[in-house]
Length: 98
Image (cartoon, rainbow, N blue to C red; front, side, top):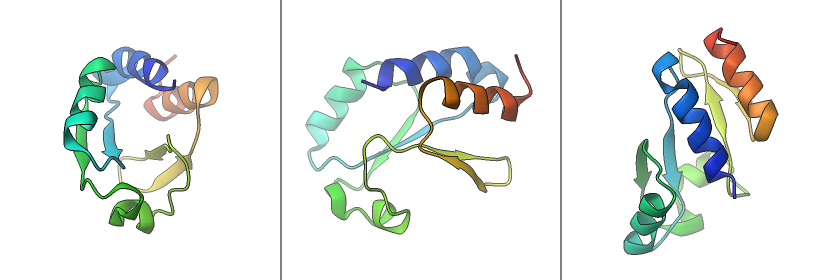
């Protein structure tokens, strides 16, 4: 349900510096790739295809899907699990755009 909103944010802010990396907790490569195509997710995607046992999910204590992490230009996490207008507002602030 969140993907169309994230696609809209990507389309609006990518040229201004927004990058997205999708980390999937899928365990089926075919279904994962179909979902990317269906939802028209144009950014970089990675997955270890280990579901909830993914080492990235364990490292960052992912307990829900979707989970979002906003990183600054130095790679520091500055916000987590924002959605909707809160996510859009934080992205605008970080990119210094209106």
